[in-house]
Length: 441
Image: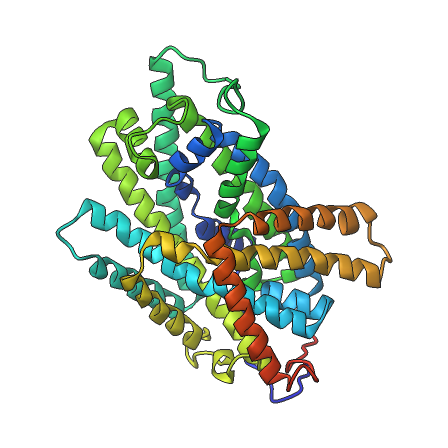
């Protein structure tokens, strides 16, 4: 190992393929597809599974690009690392800065949504109690180590999948009791739906896939990362997408169309219809568990991105230090928890309006990184997978980016502008590249 300064901190390799895939699925929180079911159903005129199927196909192109870059650069840092190594260090910094908007604030949004669910069910308990409980528990688990967090995620995901299984089973029973067929094309396409409505729903559904890329932040804690991480990325996208499509299909069968008393709580309405009040309570518990598991994964990802940037010196060096006992990036974990306290003064719609700017910016540049790698050295690289696929990924991601709402674009551009100022400061007016450490493993 070589470095331009003293020997850097090193994360411990403890995770195998199942643990990494579990982390990605926990981040995606499959059950949350029901939390937005009513909104997507209204957008697609009642063809939610088609929206998720289209989103899955679109995201697989970007997932393939993440897999290629993870194999080529098996270190922490995700899009930030890939862009700075494949394109330019300055571009890498700006992409990393944009990704921080997503990674850094996403845990706050997750905790806020979880707190909102619980506050609605238990109005006598102040919302801040739930928020602080979420923040303290997830922060503690992440500081203790990735293996502790992995075990917690296993239990939480098991319960989440159990709730999903019950929801599907009750939906099937409801459909059969109504005398309807289980095999139908209606949930995918009908006379009232169009390609335009389905595409609009896919743009919303794509947000549910934000998480397959997060597994790349665990590269330095994964055994055989050049083989494990690319497989984990594709498996996470495929398994998560498969769950989304199947769950949306049976839910749409149980409740055809898009008419709900309240679109934002449509899943509770459906849960009550197919399983009564008792199952509705179990469903609420499942949603809260999904938020908790997703919060663990999101906070872990954010801290590891900050660890990579701190180790390189583009963030203060304290971010690049590990806890002496637990070997975790404790400063980034604690800071993410502290930022989560801002949720006490925000609502869900405001806090979620700007995080996707960073995600789609990162997706676009990871695809461009694959193209840059292919242009630099085409030896042994197939044109289809190294040129055509990433080009499709770029087009899809740019389409998603420019179709974000106005608030998201304004917040994102302001954040990017701040990043340019920071970059100018640390590069002395762009006259030198950002500081960098190099590692030969």
